[in-house]
Structure formats: structure tokens, C-alpha cells
Image (cartoon, rainbow, N blue to C red; front, side):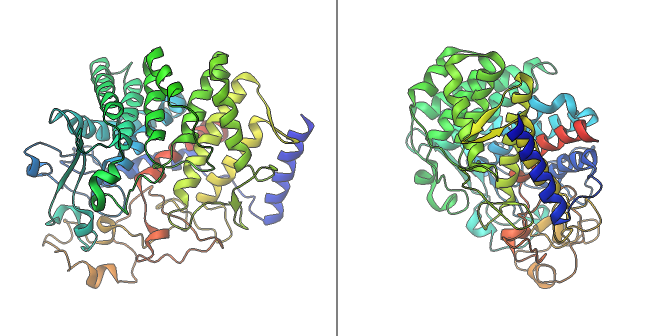
Length: 486
């Protein structure tokens, strides 16, 4: 235990030396806002309970080109496109957060369920509207990205994209199955009929993913690339889908599937594209909490991942900025930070429940070793960083004011009833140095650069654009720290 304690002490001392120790953030407030954010990304007809009042109905004819109803769901980031691959991952992560930390969410639990259901209602339409097809997106990204207009004003073509036996998409289908299976457990005790529908549909979509194997990037080309190409291939989504269906059903047929898929990669990140680390942590739960020897392989793989992340590990492959932030890639780095932080927190939770420790070489790792790093990332995002910038919009005294987001940067319908066309949004709104008129409360942006700097420029989408999957992975850690430290 000495090595684990010394690790925690050294990490604490390093934070003191860097000058970041201050009153802890209000995690309850951050949790509430992280979930509220999803209301700002809604597509479709908005309910009377909509709190972000500057948003209005949009995309009400989505699906018309295919003669189906594909209204609803979420816009992925700062544009007006519905990409199902990242949306399904967002849904899986919101569901996993709720399954692991729902009892710690307090009054936010119904809001988390509502955020999940807004996505699953749409995903169900996509999976069941046309036999033999899975709809995977609405809106032509190449056209949409040339416009700067409110979702309420959209006049770009709302092309519908799908995968099928002839044009397979095992990656997007596997992720959709994972999302529906995970969500089925969220609703199991509160809406059994809906839960059963989600699980039944998840089974069918996963069967489709397995039967007609292929990458959706190959089938759909420029409709999804370079925006959300499946760079890691589709095997990780098949593993992910099987793992979630196994957790939802406890059926050995799904266990046999992910065992039959064979050895997998050992990455040092986790994202909407690469699910391997998530699979390992999800399945390690069975080894740690159920003492099931059949899952020890995944426990070992999960711990190998942690050893690649921890800053003091001899096997570390993860860079940290001078201010203490994990730094994986230049574009939208916080998506990797929040996803990895979720895995750190969740594996620590499993370890705590069983008083488990492991080693990275000669470094003894305790649950608190992981939680120190996780908390450091959460606190950095919430403002404990060299420039005292909260990267969550509307949280703290200093947060991004010029985020790369069409709805936030353009005047609302209430203040500007006249339509703002495709090109009309650039001048004076996109190029304006003024703060965005509408606050997208809770949105977590792409984050600072490798030097802990943040210019707060609307055109700098790599750093100033929020995304649903950045927030979704943050909900779990926020719920954990809200219940533990606030």
C-alpha cells in the first residue's frame, strides 16, 4: 500500500506546486448543466418542458426523402447534421453513466433518462422504419458545413443515409445495438414495455451487424468521411455491441460472440470511433464484481489500459500538458479526456467495491490512484487550470463565449423572427467578435491547446466546438464526484 499512498501524495504535492488547489468546483451544478446541454442539441418538435428557450422546432421533415419519419435525435456538435454513429455512442455513454451512477444523480436522474430517451426514440425509428435497412444519418454534411444558419431555418437538402445487406455498416449497427441494449437497462424498472422494445430492437440490429459485415465508411463514403469515418474498423463495435447485449441479457450466446471475435487492440484512448478500452472495462466488471474467472482476460486488458494513462506509470503512453491535462490529439482533445476519465472513475469504482489493487511495473495502483487522475481532469475542465478557464459553457465566472455552434451564435427566433439563410449567417454573426447571443449551458468545448491556451475564437472549431459525446462521457464522473465530494 505504500507505493499507492506515495503516488497519491506526489500527485497532490504536484498540484500544490502548480498552484491549482482552490475551493472544489460545485459538481452538482456541473452535473445538472452537463445534462441540460442536450436540450440545446435537440432536433424535432420540442416539448413544453424545454428549458433552453432560445431553441425551437427544427428538422420536422427529416426522413421525407425516404418516405419515413426520422424526426428527433440530436445534432452532433455545432452543425445541423444528425450523424448516428457518434449519436449512438453518446447514447451508450449516457446510459452507462446512468447505470453506474444513477443512484448518485439525485434529482438529475429523470433528466438523464429524458436525454437518453430523446436519442433512443429516434434510434428506434432508424432501426424499424424500413425492414432490412438501418438509417444512419440525416443531412448532407458537405452542404450543411458551407452554411451558417440556425437549425430552425434549415433549407439545405436533408438527405437520408442508410446501411443494408448490400451496403453494410457493422460499426454503426454495432454501436446502435450497444446504445439500445444499454438504454434498455436504464428503463427496465421505470418503463418495462419501452425497455423490452429497446432490447428486442437491439438484438435485431446486432444480428444485422454480424450477418452483413463491413465498414459504413466504405458504403457511404463522403456522407460520413472525413467527419465520422470508422478509422478503427468495425470489430470494436461488434465486441462492444455483444458486450452490452451480454450485460443486458446474461445470455452466453453473446459471450461466445465476443470470445469468437478473437484478440483485439490495446489502445491508449477511448472514443466514438475506438471502443476497445470501453469493452475491456465493461467486461472487467464481471471479473471484479462477480469473481468470474472467464473474464480475467478483460480485467488484465483494462489494467493495461490504465497503465498507459497514469502519469507515473512506467508504461505511460499518454502526454499531459504543463497544466496537468491529458493531451491525446489536437482536434477536440476533451472528447478523449472525458471518455478516458469515465473509464478511470468506473474502474476505480469496481476496484473499491472489491478492495482490488494492481501494478504497473513497480507502481502499485489503488482505486484512489485512478480517482486522483480522474478528479484532476474534471477539475481542469471546470476551471482549475493555468488560465482559470472553465471549458463548460455557463459554469464559473470565465467560460468560452464564442463557441463554434450555429444555434448559439445566431440570434434566436424570438429576437430575430426573419429567416437567416445559408450565407447570411456568416456576416455579421459568424465573423463577429461579440460573444454568442445564446448560452448553450453545459456544453463542453473541444478544449485548450497543448500549451494550455485557449483563444476563444468561433472559427477555431478544433478547440471551440462542443459535441454530444464530449458531454456524455463527463456525466458519470460528475455524478461520482458530486455524490462523493459535494
